[in-house]
Length: 220
Ligand SMILES: C[S@@+](CC[C@H](N)C(=O)[O-])C[C@H]1O[C@@H](n2cnc3c(N)ncnc32)[C@H](O)[C@@H]1O
Image 1: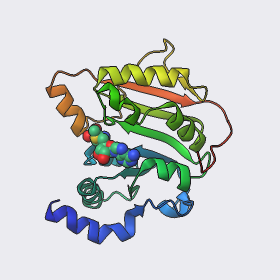
Image 2 (image 1 turned 120 degrees about the vertical axis):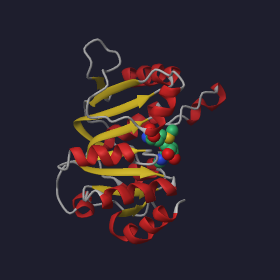
Image 3 (image 1 turned 90 degrees about the vertical axis):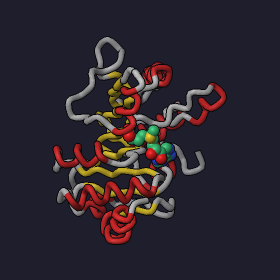
């Protein structure tokens, strides 16, 4: 962690940080100080793309979550330096946040950009995008809200397309049932740049949450 990141954590965490402790349901309007739409980003890394998107759409509240502390400091610094008041930074596991701390139908969107690809077959179960995760995520998304995923690992992209297409709570926004063209609003991320340098192909997926289903219990 750089001195600047450590300093940002110390100065700004009390104002814009969220400890993901699973102990309470968050009032999102209170967290952001307004009742505007809230988009959750899981795994923002160093946060450059997060800050850029927040700057370009100040009417959208961004709840950005990662376990990586230097990245949290970096994103807080970027928000502060660019005068962005629509970012809150969560420290901890996004699954706990979704399951224990977010109310049903509370999110207007979900972004998962370049999640860890876990390329080895025996590690596939660690991938974030799984049917159980999608059931949980869908329950926290408002009907009509969009889940936006991107990956530079083609086998994971195919995996995402398969599990999302098969999931009853989501429908593909693409009429042909395939990957989406890269939306202009998604900036290049740090991890994506590294993938492109290695010749990887990037795929975006945009799926809409379609219907209400039973909300998973806390035990699930
Ligand atoms: C491969 S990096 C991509 C970072 C960034 N989105 C980018 O494109 O540069 C994946 C990130 O997801 C975070 N992550 C993985 N599992 C997570 C979880 N369950 N909750 C929160 N963050 C998670 C990791 O710490 C890491 O920063």
